[in-house]
Length: 242
Figure (tube, rainbow, N blue to C red):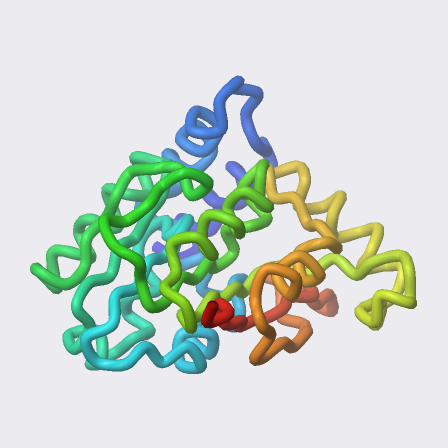
């Protein structure tokens, strides 16, 4: 069954992102056919998610928002501590992915809820303690607006966490060009076919919009591409207490 599901996913990846005008339509057209088996394939590609959540470690009673939460898979990385949280909102724009997220959220009634909304404009009823994005910034056309929105919904001192694919900058003076020209050229072109856009400005912008607490750049394996390792980063910042 895994091989069949992988074959379906690989076929969709080969087809690439659709040409629909709206972002929501593109997401639904691309992820709709693979939503039910999305997690099995991405489990081997989307590295660092569990570590990000463990490092964020929201305390009991905290309110948390995941922007671009897809199927809600990341909720399971909280483990038993999820039930100690006051509320977790999984926000996504793709109905097919949210259908999977709602099935997961049903396991924690009163704690987890899936919300269909745009990550650049959605606001919870009250300021929250933690906002994170897991492999979502590279899929949001106006990713700066998503970061700004995440920062705006945080309470002072709240945490912003991001894990995503990494594109090294051209300018070594930025202090981040440690992966070489292959990664700078190959991976952005590779992922762009599927509507995933790597941008070297992610980390500088995240640092500008929060007080950095943790930042690391790594490499992870890619399914069915032996020998290739894709760069990714983990970032945690704190909203200034003003």
